[in-house]
Image (cartoon, rainbow, N blue to C red; front, side, top):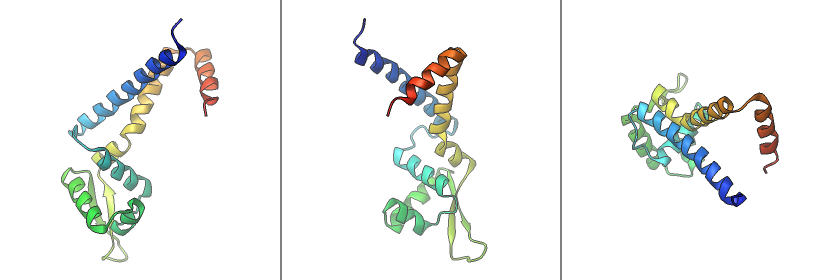
Length: 139
């Protein structure tokens, strides 16, 4: 029998590669195969915080406002975000995700869902329950 560490390494490596393939597919759909991890992280933060302003994003990321402005400008040119004025105070601008930006922000989640779908399609109900029970033990 194989060494358990090596065997688990190969299994998890395969699952991680599957997830990466699914993520890359989503990025390719958006014509953004060269998007950076940092840009994805910003899109995720914008998605999580909904009504986020430049100042709030600077505080969340612990960056300066000029850094945030530069990043949002890049993401805007990539058609991932846009600015929307606050209806009550025109001086305040919210950073919003475009459909493309939302798709990228949620790509990892969607990719993981595709991997889970493949796992479920490969196992019967009893095996799925056993897998869930075993994985719950991992802390």
